Length: 311
Image 1 (cartoon, one colour):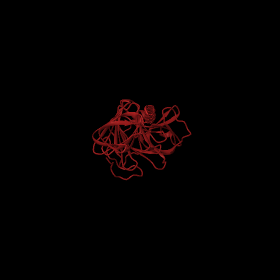
Image 2: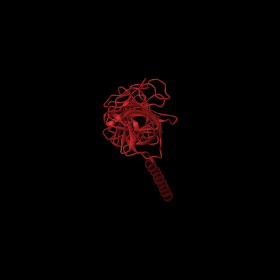
Image 3: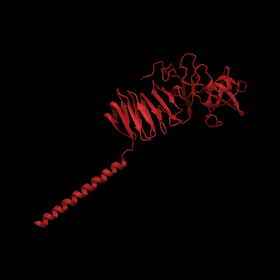
């Protein structure tokens, strides 16, 4: 009886050890397969983290979705970037980017971090840059460079806007590829025609009839981007011009970005809102217009009504 009892006890112990070992292995697998931690999220109130309601703060994992209600939330990322979401906003977070799905977001200390919204990528040129991005009505995305400078790329990775500190643009990806439209002072550099668009501050190389007589003039050009042509170093794209409109004498030095005509910017925080007589640029299938007062509600972009930006 004693031997049987000892054997039974040993069998029970072995079974327990095997169960614990299996459980430990399972937990180890879960841990190894878990999404990495990328930072923390904090709010003075409650928010939704992957559909679960959280109050105060929580750990932020790769790929997590955060939805705010009445309270703003702030994310401190392991990379050092600081991001905040406005009330009634929604975004998905990764270690190197935030995909804004609704509302507004603000990026500070942006080294190695970028925003994505409606197929557009807003990336800083320096780690100290900060920006505010708002999802507007329809397909509109509004971007304001609060400090530093930012590059905006379309879904194909083509540069569609350069924003310096204090500048703000309303951007709208077009459902159908439309002709490029740029306004600026035409320059001839080493045999190449270059134009820096006043609204987006993007430089393009141009080719087409009627350009030679417009060198030094402020013009509006319409044309199609040629993806097979390689632009010169100073330009980000090559455009075959189909129409040229003379607007007057160009800016001193021939820089379209320095012009302060209709729809252009005079540098600093000055911009011209979209409205009657204002310039709308179209580059890489994205319509763009400068906005007044940071992210003020603007007028009409092609294909959009006049309703104001939702906050």
